[in-house]
Length: 162
Image 1 (tube, rainbow, N blue to C red):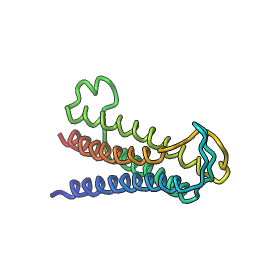
Image 2: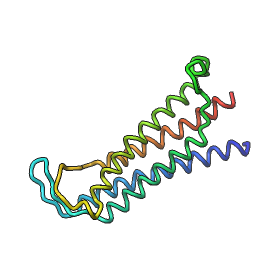
Image 3: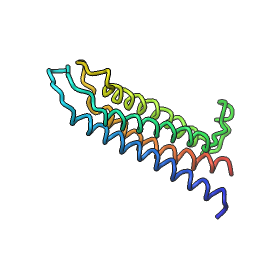
Image 4: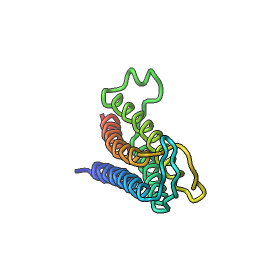
């Protein structure tokens, strides 16, 4: 096995590990948030912020961003224009599709993690609309991001070597 192939496999494993860890931290942050005292009346909820949920949410968001940056640096998608896309190989087109999906999952997952994290900030001890399951859904999207990031790197590498 060539050193380049081993390096790509190690990078894929690292990115997957970072995303999976971010997903687990997001789900644990949701669990910590649910343990905080709260009072609910229809759609409105008054709750005390959870410092543990806040720190776990920050860690999950940070790992998700770091994994995304690393995947984009290693992906190597070289399709830039629509002409390039129409002439690209199927693996190049698949690579671009995976790149697009990683950006979408990053945007949605990071937004959910940040909203859930900020609702547990010390200065946010107030009443408002419920933010249930934001961190756990953001954590699940971290798992989705892991799959598409690895697929992006694999197809990008295949398109580059073909």
